Length: 140
Image 1: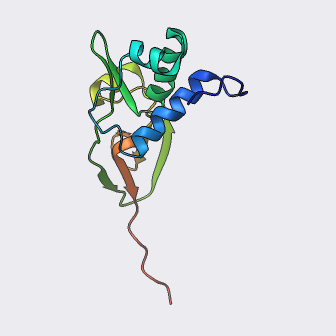
Image 2 (image 1 turned 180 degrees about the vertical axis):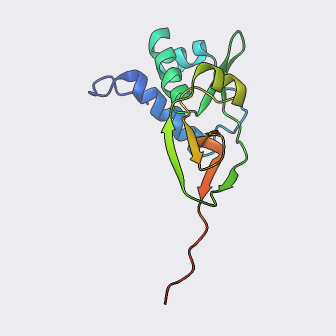
C-alpha cells in the first residue's frame, strides 16, 4: 500500500508496487496493467501521480504504453549473443529517436555501440544483447 506519510514520493511507491508485481510474476509479459482510473481508485492517488509512476516504469523498460489502449508489461525479448573476435571498443549510450524506431527499443533502454577494426559501427540494444569475448588460451 501507499504510505502517505513517507518521505518517498507516492508515484515512486506506486512504481515500486507495480515493479514488484512484475518481478513476482503477478503481472506477466504482454499483460495489460490496470487502467489509470483503476490505479487511481485502488491506491487513492491522482492522475498525475499514476502517470508519473508509469513514466518511471517506461524509463526502466518494464512497461510500454500504447496511446488510446493503455500500458502493458513489456514482452520478453530473446537475447542475442555477440562474440567479439578482435580488438574492439564498446560504448553505452541512449539511442536516438531514429534508432529507437529502427530497432524497436522502448523508452529507457540504452544501446551498445560496438566499434571493431575494419568493420562498421554496430548499434545493439542493451536489453537483448550479451557481449562476449573469446577466452584466451591459458599461458602456463
